[in-house]
Amino acid sequence: MIAGKTMKDHLRFACAYWHSFVNTGGDPFGEGTYIFPWNEKSDAVARAKDKMDAAFEFITKMTLPYYCFHDVDVVDYTNDVGDNDKRLQTMVDYAKQEQQRPN
Image (cartoon, rainbow, N blue to C red; front, side, top):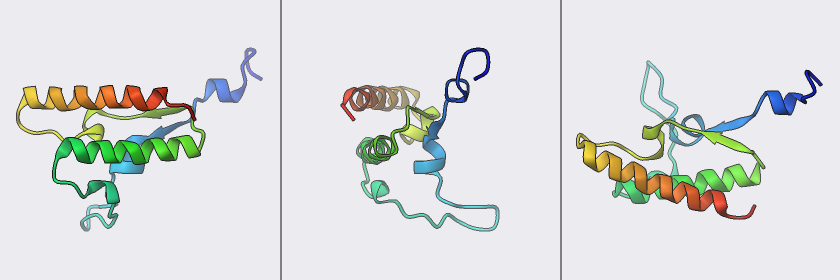
């Protein structure tokens, strides 16, 4: 206990979306070697939903209380700012639905 809080309260463990579901395992010497089943669809939003389904299955099974991500971790971007905004908003709405599901 520190200042009346447990270490769990001070250090909130989270699943990092990019490190767990986006990183391909590449390094400066070569391409990535991870092949993820959620990266198979050609449509970016459908692919992102598959990735999020896998992420929430993992997060739920591991009973992790938090997750963190960058916007481009959730859905691939294009050169069109308006399209990027639509994609991200679609995935934010999808994440809200997933977060409401009982564990």
